Length: 529
Image 1: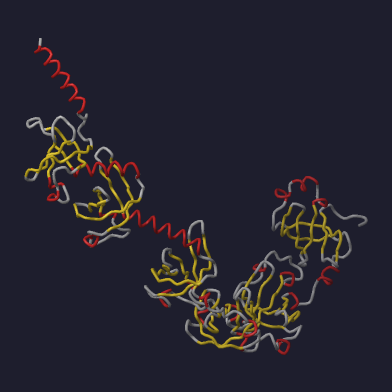
Image 2 (image 1 turned 180 degrees about the horizontal axis):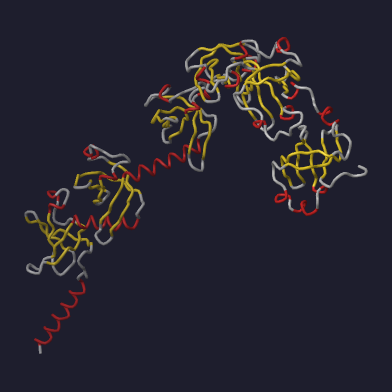
């Protein structure tokens, strides 16, 4: 009976003892007390049914550990053979750091850490726990000497968190780019058009230079380098130059800044219309030649254009390079100044007298001239009287009798012909010539022979139109047979009834001397007209 009571008392004591023990699982962080130190190990009571073993090498200062110290460790595993619990201080710290990190940080968060070890493919970074920094994410630019980053403290962006493996990948490159963008946005908001700011030449291209303003790059276009002509930015700038520039435009949406160097100085175009007056003679240097003219520098920043038409009074110039060369000095006359558009028109031919000035001394109305056909148009031909002087023979002044469809029916380009001067207009630079005026107008004489209405004449068809046929009479005059003056069946079928070149007999209906028209008929003579 006594034995039974003792067994029951021992059983209840065992149950009570079990209840006092902690329920601890592997991977759990617990607090314990050092109860013994043996060599390189410490025995720690964590309130579990068996004590734990902690390797002292995991502590920062193993020699300072003493019995009674409280310590936070991780329950790593239970050694089945010894019945002892394996504890880890280092893994406890790592686990705690991991828990704290995933609680406060996410991918994209910024953390601070020290690069403490170089490994294959990059570095290990201490951010409270170990994180991997790929070599490609160390800097915004490729780095040749990676050792320079060892033991340096930087800010990083967490780019990946692997919860399963408890791995973290960080990037210094992302942090630098983020800071750069933040600085860029801040600077764009602070800058103002017209502001003069210091910068350094970062890059030079054919179209301009990029200037580092200390957080943002601005474009200094080649046209804003100087008031004068610049062939390439390297004529003025060198890489690394420290310069002052003016902010001339800001695109806040795209965070772009346009800069100007010439805008810091006064524009030479101010007061240019007072300095250069039309009619004045200037001496300048040819800076550029294009198909339509030559640009001449009057002074740095001031250029004028000699148009190809203003190069010579008499020569027919195909390209300005026939007369001028880049770099050559030239004397010219100012023709016009447009300060608002910053344009100056110059003339080279105005340096000598115009052949039009004394035209009336060389030609009079009624003079017969001989010249070469220089150009043929739909409305007439241009005949060269002398170099620089062309006269126009209008198509209406080419024949007294024939209706000319195109001037090329009578003359060819390059052909030398005779013509009569009809009028001179030196101010308008026009000379009117006539070809038919070389002979007397035969109209009155020729029409007298067919003047009586009803006269029968012969002719040849020269043209067929929808309203009738034109007939050239034997005496050279031309008349029209209207469809109303021909048999009905032929009027309905003009193209099949008549052919150009056919001879036929017609009757004169009416001669209009004022308008020089002759009406003909195929219906025969009339008693009255």
